[in-house]
Length: 323
Length: 293
Image 1 (cartoon, each protein chain N blue to C red):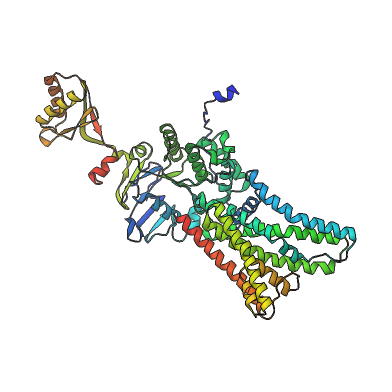
Image 2 (spheres, rainbow over the protein chains, first blue to last red):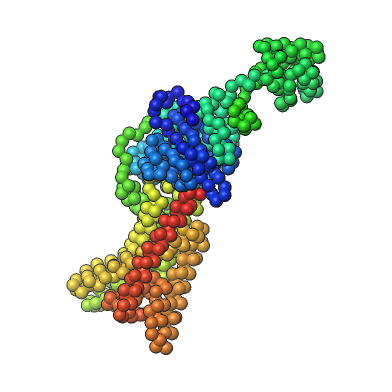
């Protein structure tokens, strides 16, 4: 697995995370099976359905869980022997609630900074800094029991960053957030990776989210590596087209049937007609466009737009990994 | 005020600053965790409400000592009306309540709210974390028991009691208290780490600490009355308080009930230390397991 991207990573540098044949079994259940992945600098998305092994992988990398077999290195340190060193350099934002309700975010983040080895004054300064970065203002002095989900997620993120880690594991940071807060959180994740210079491994079961923020995506399925490559590779053009005509579903279906007769495979997608990559006879550039134009004109429909169909991370699951 | 609510919460980006300086050693981390835990056991650094119970109990346990010192000063007595160890024993209800009520602060909160995961994702190991938490609780209990007898000791000396008579008794009582505090911290700590809900933990601890000592005393009373050998001594092993009192008696530190002879003091000490060791192993295993979930 040499497909490491992330422009900031010089050739030959130590990968942020590297696993080799990492396996974790809970009895008969294989949470991870012979996993070989490499994570570089920048933001890496770890994608998979619930139960695909994302959280298990993070816990193993942190040394909270012992792998059944296999090895892994985080920032060049072996997880089996240098767990305490790794935990000094890494920040972790767990998926579930993990904040004591009767302490203020400010006090808690200072305490967590000290528990990562920051001296008292540095911990106070950095806690204030980091809380500002994640966007907790005056509410930082209130007890966390009264926080909204969005504020709790910010506090959780702040404690993961307070000790200036080299790498952060963010497990489902957008969980439970409303759409606006979700966008904020994703922007923050992107800033951590690009502006703060901290490598990020972020998980989500929502693929669309990670498309937007990550430089590199690793897709897990049932504890196995489905695919690992630069985000741009996932989002390339499929060769298909999207067509929109006026006249609602009736006009859409009329066009679809006519295009099918002309030899193009297509299906409805929302108000649009999605045309699969054309068969070889029609594959020359512009041919499919011409057919669409002529068919629309013949039917007397009003053509709104023709645009190239873009792939999405979801397609990886449909095509089984190799798009 | 309206200006405040007009604020749109814009975050001014001053840029991110890293930290390249020195990081503290494991020993410094343990010390910080220990002190924070100790403060939390007395409600310091937590909400105002959480300070009420520990300080109320502490007040109740010191008050009799202040009165005793006052009386000793007033009547110009040449000894205390009761020994230091006996005073500790007399206040077992308050000390048990303090241990039962404050153990969940150190052992349930992290597990229940799952902040344990954040601790274990940091350099300290689960075993060291559990040990440090235990030390915080044990020292908090020790301080709770120690303060009143310190008042007795200092007050007594100021009232003109003989230093050479009082000091050995006092030091013996302190050693016994260290053992007692270790036992109480172990028992209430294990219960709190399993019960998770504060109410359950408190009730379970009170049953084990206060009800058990009553049962033990009944058994000892019956055995003593009937003249059955060894039953009373064995029964005494089932409560930290009767362990404390039995050892106090055999060590001549003065306590009201139970007398140990022969090898029994050694058996008591070994039982106490064994219980503490087993409890610490349990706590470490419990924290490791919950942290991995």
